[in-house]
Image (cartoon, rainbow, N blue to C red; front, side, top):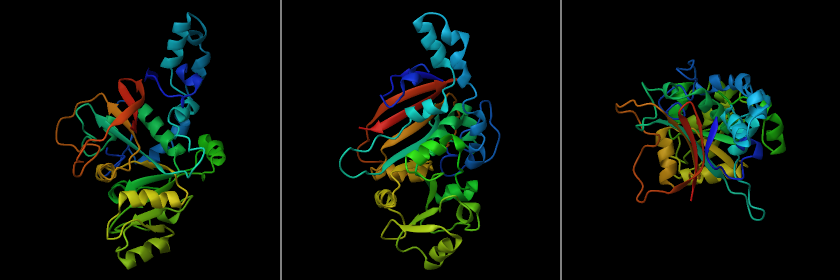
Length: 321
């Protein structure tokens, strides 16, 4: 993985030497190069631990030890980054030294060159192994993963799993062993017998409105989910949802979509950052974009923080200005 754009000082010194699957409508996220194995996001998240760090020993290779400083820099930059380097490059901003810590919402999506967030209803075909590594890293850094109900229904979402690679860092940050999953739903039309509700490491959250059907709320609570009211009517107010998660102690927020949910968050002005993978593919057709719904009155400006590349894929990190 190479660094194209100067990253911020959040990235460690060694790093410089060194769809809708995330949204509604597809049962995949990021996969492997040339067509990854199938399965949903959480299934494939578990395989990351087997791959991460596999090329870290290349830092000690002859190419990295010999040659001019520029050649050594290039050799280090071209290798696959370690998990520690990716975690540093994608670290959440430090909270203010004084004053309350406010929630910070990050989105993670993938798009083709012509703007498609999926191909044949899935995002895995427009993705890559490096994208999956970043996907897993973003989950490992988050307090909570916010997803739309349609994503849960179509992908059979399961709880996020604890990963040894992140255990020490999460404990030091005061985080649980894995991020909680927060499902945004107006109808609560969900299968509460799924492991997502019955056997998570940390209780799954259900974000809904005050007018949600009482029997569905009761069913969610009986399954072990924690119902959080984040709207006065049937639906969820994105700004209120962010505040509610913050009040529960979740300040490092990550949304994996889908496009409808991401569009609502953009329209509400609560998205602080977008991690966007640009896939070097053209699909044409009428596939969804990464964000849907009504347009905003004035386009929101985001600044490029860092840009990484591997095998033609671009991994951009953009923050709200």
